[in-house]
Length: 71
Image (tube, rainbow, N blue to C red; front, side):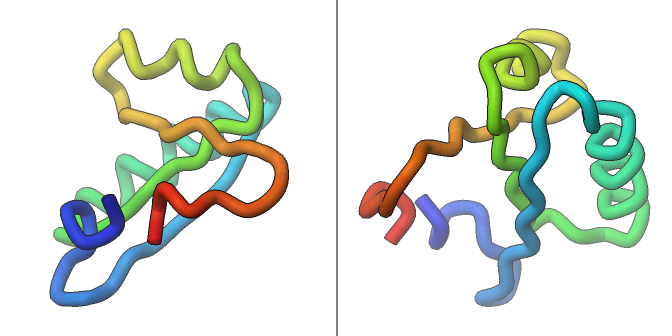
């Protein structure tokens, strides 16, 4: 998954829950304006995951513990 999202071998990541959805929306807007395409938004709750359906950005579900899915 990381290889498919990374830009020139780099990946910028942020994590948030619904409480910080305004921050994430602003962060994604600005990072896109800078030409960065290699980024991920980790959703720490189900409510932020629902943003996926709005098309504003596509969060990935975070989980507790180690995730081998991203490596």
